[in-house]
Length: 428
Ligand code: EPZ
Picture (cartoon, rainbow, N blue to C red):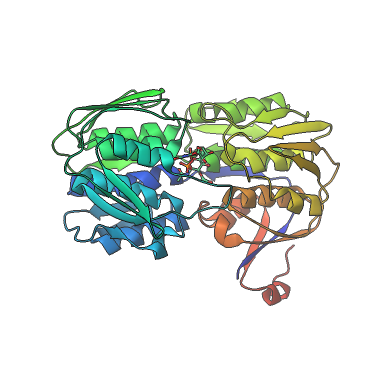
């Protein structure tokens, strides 16, 4: 098992280049199946979830060729298998997009029920409701979802709650359906727009992505395309907070500042100086910071995927801050780990009451999921002494070249193979 060793309390300074959006890539790569052609996708992040997804696509008969580290040629002309094994699915939740893409193209798919980060119960009833509304028969048995249809016909789907996954999956299933599909109460996240733009570049007719009503006019065929994925909103936000929590001066580059508004606004409210440029944001800490209240909401609200990182900085911000989680029910399990680092956080239901402490201190902590892991890393960067973080495999799901990027702005962070190896590294 690998661990990250961080010696904190160092002011971070410099530039971080942000990678492509993991959650956009996790949908765009399966969407290539709809073209039955060759697509070249650029700005694909080099993270574990993508590697697992690409392996599961190869198992279907898709030919994957890396042109360079972030540019992938995907040839979906020889798909021979419409079943996705549990071995792949249990590792990543987004494999459910293979269901929408295979159903949309071949009117048949079999995918094991998804796994993913442990952040609460994660039903997919809205995905199933959408597929059924389009005319598919969907059966869930023995942990497998089977979907099939003679044909898919456009229809109106009103989502019971704002869900990113169901919005994208219904788009995937509807682009080749007969007639028009309208998704109401759709999610508006930047990667929904990116997936719609990608599908349109293959010849789809999707309008309204980024609003809560998406209209999809079904087309007969799609074709291959070249497409560049947008930058990762959550990776950007994580490095912005890395600058702010260490009293530093960090510029994130290759970003879309508009996507960062909710995060920039909250940091500004805390007193952090945010300078926005065309494709970069400079974050200058301006201590002491002010306590704030935050509630996670669907986009354009404050993202749930930034909740642990924000809680980390609030844990060392003077005064009482309140964090309310409104998307997932089990996303505060990491607060016990922060408390082991000297934080003072009490969780009741979906609310965390955070009493800011003067100084966090290094400890041995375990990351329970991807974003919680990011929150613990941020706390460790600001903490006095050494922190050892286990559960690195979760963090690797979504952060490309983490140590390299953090070292580039002055952090002391090392990856060690096993606990025993730690003594081999003297962190200065
Ligand atoms: C996506 O998950 C992201 N994953 C998550 O990112 C992110 O936390 C989440 O959206 C919210 O922004 C990917 O894009 C691969 P949802 P998703 O459907 O699509 C409920 C990360 O760290 N719901 O928007 O699975 C659900 O339980 C990850 O990168 C239903 O009840 O989330 C939740 O309360 C983790 N029925 C809410 O909706 C459904 O059929 C929003 O979930 C679907 C969802």
